[in-house]
Length: 121
Image (cartoon, rainbow, N blue to C red; front, side):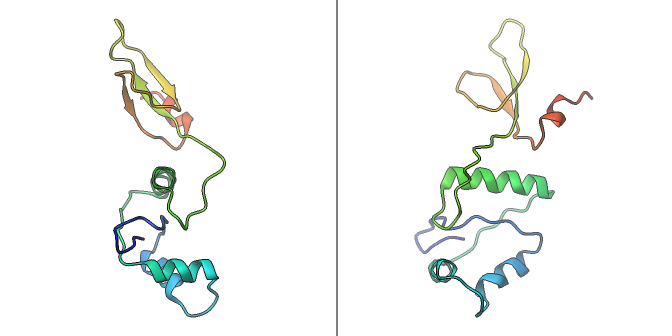
């Protein structure tokens, strides 16, 4: 959800976008926080993902990156695994890491599960 200045005020996910958005505009059962958020909404932007795991990772990353005013900040500090290929090494190696650094390596991910990163074939 974005405000009139195109600032992100809330990041969410839904299987049914119509039903999720309808919840925010119902007359009853809204907290003062939700009423304030709804009053600031100017327009919506959405991204379609292939599955729920991808949607969860995207939501988490967007909240961490943009820190929207009406999202609860994620305190668990969980980071998702990436596959790192050290292309600057004499013999490039493949690693699993949870941090991306500016070291010239190639990074792929994030992945929902370290197990899927380690799977062969």
